Length: 138
Image (cartoon, rainbow, N blue to C red; front, side, top):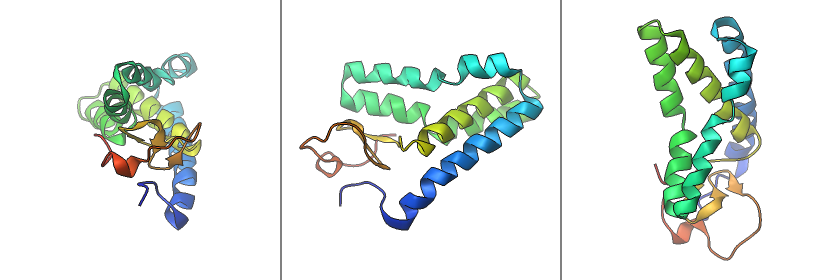
């Protein structure tokens, strides 16, 4: 097994990303801090790409940490619990970004390199497969 999602599950994941993107944008328009803030911070999770400068394993950990719904959900929950609009907005922007990436087919990364994701390979094809390196990094 290559470690990538296939079949009907893969077909569902990209539209699911679109729906998360739309839901996060609609929620942000109701509760957020304005379009400028959204535009400024929308690509912030992609700063995790710099982790790949330290190698594919560190890069995949950094990328997966910034592209998991766990952190975004914690921000939204904390924002609601303590009535902090900035946390709520950050969580919604973060969810929108992850949904956008998933809709484009960018999934969580394997430690073998940026192109190996749970949604399939991106970029140039290489000889190493994720199954040779183990499981997804957190």
